[in-house]
Length: 134
Image 1: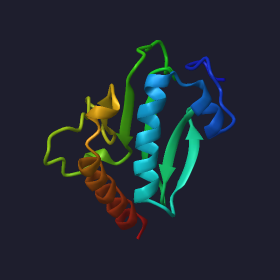
Image 2: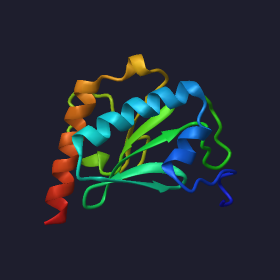
Image 3: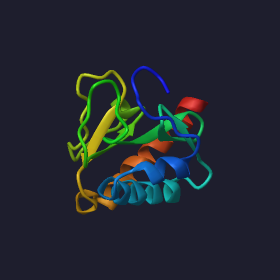
Image 4: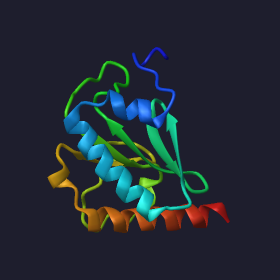
């Protein structure tokens, strides 16, 4: 545990078991999409949430029930791109919230997840990761 979080997980499975049902459904759908886009990628916990790596960090899934600092809002899941500032975002759905690199999309239900759009962002993020690794 650290001073910003009151939870500590040893595995992805333990993380998933902790989530409330509404967040779990969103996380499972996002994980499935990510893992299908990057079958050679790695899934690892960082800050008690799953991050996905090809060469470097590509994206993460951050459910609201895993707090950071004093922020606590249940029922939503943040999907973040670690190099989101490099994504084209022609659909205008990414939120940079004043951050230098991270760009996110917040989901409150699985119905909000546009898998085709997210898949295109994932492939672009993987291309950027590949280019940055050269």
